[in-house]
Each structure stands twice: as C-alpha cells, then as structure tokens.
Length: 415
Image (cartoon, rainbow, N blue to C red; front, top):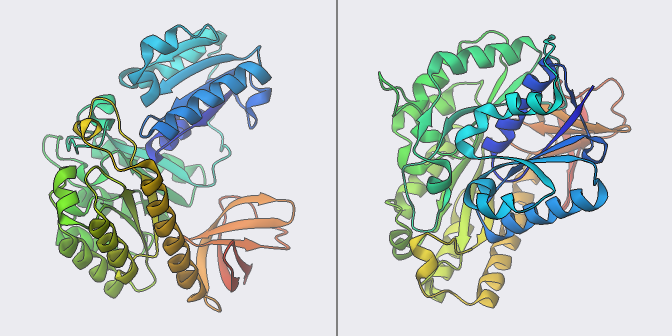
C-alpha cells in the first residue's frame, strides 16, 4: 500500500485541506503516514505569507531530497502558486498543483500510485476535525499577497458544510474547527446570500457536535447579531482570535484597513463582558513601512491595556507585488527589537490569563498523548499537560482541573 505524508505550512485553511485529503486518501486505499521519512510520497502544502514562511518551505524541500531521496514530492499551496516556474526547474519535484487545482490533488496522487480501491473512511491522526468553509479574499490590504495567490472570496454552500460536519461527527470527532482565508466573509458570494451567522446557527443544530472553534475573525465584519450568537451558543468555544494588525490609525490607513482601535476595543470588551472565560487573541504586524516610534508605543500601550490574552507578532515582511513592498522600510534591527517587546508582553499577559484559571475545572479535548502525558486543549485555548493519563485518548472530551500555570506550561488533572 502506497504511503503518503502531508506536511502543512501556514494557515488553518491549509490544515483543513490536509484533513480532508487525508480522509479521501484513506478511503481510496492509500496509507497516510505519520512520518515523512517513511512515506513514498510527500505532499508539501506550502505558504508564502512571509519571506520566513517561504524560506521554511524551501528548506524542507531540500531536507526531503537529502534525507529521503527516493520519495516523490508533490508541492501545492501559495508558494507553488507564486513561484511555479521556478519550482518546475527542481528535478526532485514530481508534481506541482496550484491553488486553483487543489481539488484535483487526491485524484492526481491516485494517478501516481494506481490505487483506487474504495474503503470505509477511518479516523486519522487529528484529534479535532478541521473544515474549510471559505477560500480567497477580496480585501486587498496593502501588505498582503494572499488575494493574488488564493483568488476572490468563495464560500462552500451551507448545506455542503453541514453535511461535511455531520460526517466528521459520525466518525467520532467532538470538536470542529472552521477555517477560512476570510472566515467572516462567509456566504457573501453565495446566491441566495448567506452569512457566518447563518452557518453557525445551522451547525449548532447538529446532534452530537460538542464544540465549534472559529479561526481568525475580521473585526470589520462582526455585526452585533453575530457577536451575540457567538457568546450565547454553548457549543462555540470561548476562544476568539480577531485580526488587529495595528492600533495606530495612521498605520491602519496605510495598510488599507478601514477600522479603528476604538471599534476593535468595543468588540473585545463586549466579548469579555458577555463571556468572561473567553481567551482573546490577535495578529499584529510590527515595523510596517512608515511606523514611527510613536506609532509603536501607541500599539504597545493599546495591547497592554486591552483585554487581549495573547497576540501573534509578525515582523513586517515585504511581499513582491504588494504596494507596501515599494515603500520606505523600517530598518530590520528596529523591527526585530519592537517585535521582541510585544512578544514578551504577550507571554506576560497569557501567563496571567492562565493563572487566573488555576483551581478551576474546564472542559477540553485530548489533542495528543506521549507516554503517560496527555495534552488537553480547553475550550478557551489553554494547553494543559496531564500526567498519569492512563485511559485517555486523542479526541476525547474531558473535564480538567488546572493545578499550576508557569511561563512554559500549564499542569492539570482530569477530574
């Protein structure tokens, strides 16, 4: 039986695609490997969001060629989209599949292997089901290359998503993670038009589905009815990651993002007040062209005073083809120093958040287990290490009591 390994870089959407491909490959009679070194085919689902992401993909491709020279390599994703001609010169790559042909990936792999004996879908290595509900983006922020690589916003029909989620629930998954390049734009392109609220209301009615986790949310597309449903529906995890990018209005304007820090803070305060156990996160770009020291200080102080419990900090990376790539750049050393300041602040805020739950019992999913130590991910995004975890298995929903929260980890016990 031919073995296939899928290695993901980048966003939740890539992870959701790999989750779907793994199920289809298993049904088609292929073996989905746990280790790329043991696989006959390695699928690289790439990312090109930043220069660092591109470098990581290229480094991995070289590593496959060096350590597993007999493996056939299939490259897809955003790097394959943007540098298809260059990659085609790499003789180690068997096949390149651009983003607009990702739907053909499984059939292409079957063509390489000659497999095709259908069998029952099995539960694979993921403890949570990832479901892609939307693709592409129409926003065209001045720093972002993704719209040119992923195309316009396209939503999966609501009934198709509902049927997909029903299917994974029948296979035993307790939690579903909804992924989209621009998740909050879900349904705007459908006819008749739908919305993310429509989708969530439909999914909440599915029997057996215990938890729904949302990937990144755009604060510009969070109307009050959607916010109110998010905090009132118990199946929706109290974990909300809202794209911020910056807090300086001048920087936001140059980014092409029509939002204000006051509007963003209003949403955060609503979520915290309505569902106090919520974990609130954000994406932040540091060192955007034209960012002054005053802009950075304003951002730092905004993050410090806000209800945010963590933030993913990205040092600005110019992407060829975007307007911001041609503007005067903030020196790399300045970007690095500012990034470290915010990452330290994020660690401090997240530690305080986790410590506030010590002694409390939360519900979580066993996401992985190594030996006698299991990792449980709570609904509000706290990773809890549980020792003496005999009887626990990935995907299981358990009550966990937090015992101790330190800088590097949180310990707990199942009760």
